Length: 317
Image 1 (cartoon, one colour):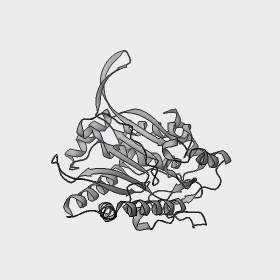
Image 2 (cartoon, one colour):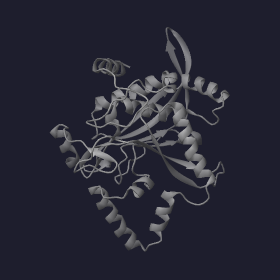
Image 3 (cartoon, helix red, strand yellow):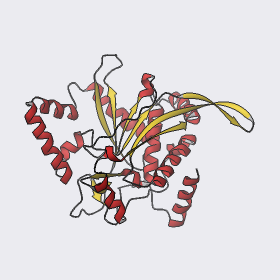
C-alpha cells in the first residue's frame, strides 16, 4: 500500500511519473504498444546453490518448495533494490506500480486433463523466500480446494455468453476504460493482464524456455518463461566442474527503464540465486520509485552512501 497522496493523472494501481526525462515520456508515442517495444532475451541462472538449499528446506518441512519460489523471491528482492523494474505504461504514460503482483498459471490437479487457471499473488518488497512460499501455497490451495471458478474465470465466462458483436463492443469499452484508468478495482484484481510480471514454469513439463509475448491489453511489462534445469561443465581454476543452470526466456517492455537498469536487475537476480541464504531474511532497506513509498514496517531507510555502495556492487555482479 502506498503512502503517496494521489493526484490527478494517477491510476488505481499506480502513480504517474512526472519528473522523467522528456525523451522517456516521448517514447510511448513512438512505440504505443508493448509488442512494438518488447525485447527478448535468454538468461541462464546458476542454481547449484539453490538446489542444495532446497534439499535442506524440504527436510525442514517446506513441502513442495522449488526453484520457482526462489526465482520469484529473487525477482521481488531485485524490485526492492531497483524499483524501476516495477513500472508500467498505459495510455502512453509511465507509472510506478503501488505493489508487486505476480501472475502465473497453475493446474488444479496433477492429472493430464486437469483444467488450468491463473492466479495472481500480491507480494511486499520485504518478502523473504518463506513469505513467497506461504503466499503461493495459500493461493494454490485455495484454487485446488474451492469448487467452481475463480474471479478471472467468472468474468471470462460471463463475457463469453454474450453474442460476438456485443463481446467485441464490450472489449472496446474495456480498452478505453483501461486507457484512461477507469477500470474498477474488482476487474483489476481479477485480470491476469494487470500485474508486475507473468511467469510460467515450462521446466515442470520438460520443455525448454520460450519467449512469450507480453499483452498489449493490461499493464504487465515482464514475462518469464522458465525452461528445464541443465547440467553444464564449467572450468574453474583449471578444473572442470558440473553445475546446474536454469535457462529463462525473458520478454520485457524496453520503454519502462534503461538497458543499464535491466542489466543491473538481472545481475542482482544472478547474485541472489548464487547466495540463496540472502533471500531467507528481509532486505536491510527498500528503494522506492519517484515519490513512492510502500508500507514496509520490516525495514528502515539506509543512508544514501550505503545505498550507492550496494548499487555499485550490484552492477559489478
